[in-house]
Length: 258
Image (cartoon, rainbow, N blue to C red; front, side, top):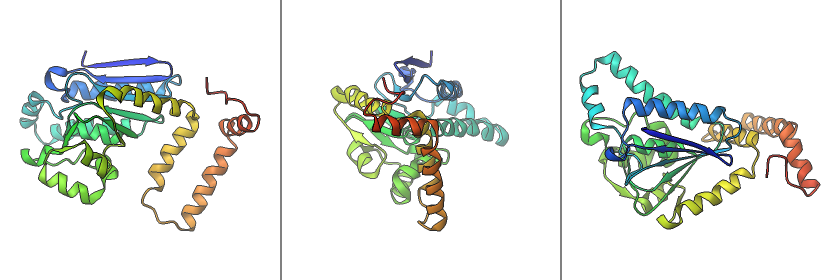
């Protein structure tokens, strides 16, 4: 199987499973990822999702055989193929529940798109990154919305144009990674993050993700102030909001926390 999906204790784990090609994308893996994101997002027992890879790499980008096939495609076939990748990344970014990228090794080209489309990305010293498309005469167009949101246009200009390989400390500095930990501590650190996530409300997480998408980059004007006031009023009046406030005042766990 090119993809492994597990559900346990409120956590969905998706693992790229093509270690022989460093978990590189092809059309089958893209379709499998899109299906997995949709299924886990619809599963109310899953509260958070971890995306990982088997073998030495997280994801090396496009599979060489897939690229050979694409070279023979006409315009319409290329658009259809590229749209499948774009839709898969959008499905990951638009999941209502929190997502964590477990980056234990290199993430190149489209693999960096997976990292950037997750809410949180944790890497080890063995991870390396490259937007390598320019050296193939290509552009990182499909992954650019997620990468530029993570690292900003200035860093994107440098690394998109140079296609140079950079390490975890630089990835952390520019915002592609959220945290850097030693390999031996990776799963324990992610476990701590998951404990924090499981303590939050599922509806709150979905609304917070919408909030980050909708507020980022906007001017703080009367329209934004009114919108944010409306959002907090709505969630306070929601069943989850009422339960959360009541549990705090009554010094007990909320209903969603085990």
